[in-house]
Image 1 (tube, one colour):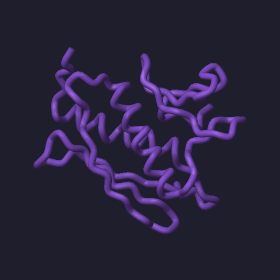
Image 2 (cartoon, rainbow, N blue to C red):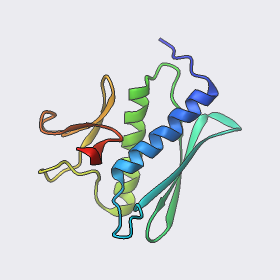
Image 3 (cartoon, rainbow, N blue to C red):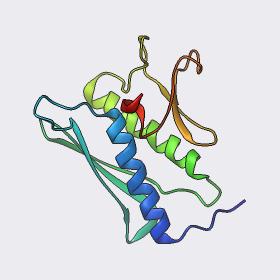
Image 4 (cartoon, helix red, strand yellow):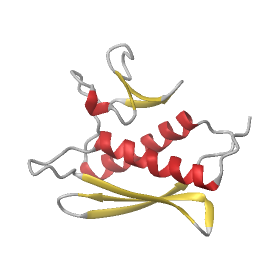
Length: 138
């Protein structure tokens, strides 16, 4: 079933998703500065491509990531989980560790799409599950 999103709704989904995922992946310094910041937009000349510019602090290393915007048949939770997995991989490649960590375990949580997009423990979903964007609120 095709989801008929307007370009504004698509842009809001892309930007909102990036902000939620980065909030979950980010740690906050003693000065209250997040270790990651993100700028996200849809590219005007390629409406099917989203652009994330992720800045890692304190070294201010930047990575620009082009990715597919939400597909016509892709639900919002599917898009959010897919974007979370891609941004999680970017952090792993740059920082050398996976985030966010599964509380009490020695592995990261995994993004999954269900009724909502969630971070879950890959070994035991009952151990940990939080909506993407609410990891630090658990």
